[in-house]
Amino acid sequence: MKQRDIAEGTRRHPRDLHYEIRKKDEMEFVYAAFFETPTGRVLMKFGRSCVPAKRIRDIAMQCPYAIQQACFAQAGSKAIATAIEYSIFRRLKVFHTRGEWYEMDEEEIKLFGVTVFEVFGRVTGRKLKWTHMDMTAMLAEVAESLRKFNPVRYMIAAKALAVKSGAVDEKEEKE
Image (cartoon, rainbow, N blue to C red):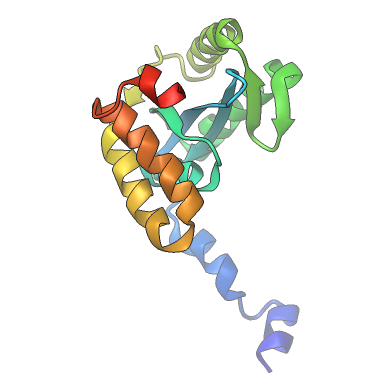
């Protein structure tokens, strides 16, 4: 009975309800998260979200590398955030690896920064102001979340937290 109602359009599937709950004028943000790979290159994820801190935390739990830095900026409406996101995707497509993931070296990260500032200013008419997240607190949260489910990734997150908090010297960590 429920499947027929869904097929006829008289009922919405539960996974679609979040679209109805979400307000049309809800604030959207753009975010960037940076992860250092073992090869020394930087894996970067750029996207948009209504709750960027939660989104970045979720990304940090999914990525096999420890998060190095994350930031977000208030974009405005969903349409503005989407325009910024797609403009960035088009301009950085040479660095694209998969989905919203890009792989760059240190010099190319500078190009990303210039590109984001330019696109954000053009689309919004405002100067970009990043809000940087406290990586120590987030790494601790991620490590604790991973403890039960994935011991290997928990160890990676715990080591990154130790380096970030200064408990272990970064040079000692690489040895």
